[in-house]
Amino acid sequence: MTTHVSTRWTWLAQSLVLLLLLPSLAAVPAVADELTPREQAFTTQMENCVLVGTFTVDGQTDGDPLKPERYEIESAVKASGDLWVFTVRIKYGKLDTKLPVTVPLLWAGETPMVSLTNASIPGLGEGFSARVLFHEDRYAGTWQHGKVGGHMFGRIEKAKPAAAGEKKTQPDAAGKQGSGK
Image (cartoon, rainbow, N blue to C red):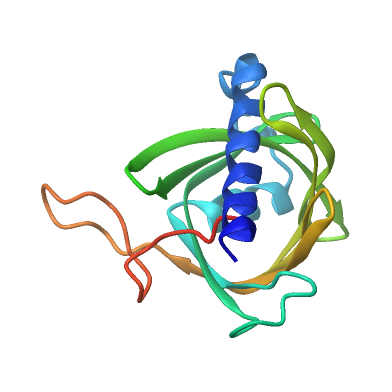
């Protein structure tokens, strides 16, 4: 199980490095009036939200097959073409930081989908893939890192405002955030 949790966080870390390789994209957000209505709706939905749900690891037979996951999203901004910059809070171990992550976002009609295929990130590895659909107040998808993969699904909730002087976080029942795919 520790290997799978490490694998999920490695996938997330690699996505973050991708942004570092494409810094110019993060610096050129689209102007709101240039967005289509569906893009504007998605931007509004992702503003100050939290993805709260579960993930699975294919073939895992020990314990509960559903593992909790939680992702805080400050914003999602169209950068260029199909690339979008998600500003997310990452909390893992002693790391607690806000970072921009650039990912491809495709559309199936009015349904947005993050689509990452066999991404290779220098220094961290290769073979990272994911498909995550967003519909109304839910998300669902698949994730893959090499031979390890699974499903993920849950709710999209608006983040609760932090109290004055308090960091903006909403830990899950175990006091952790994120699941580490």
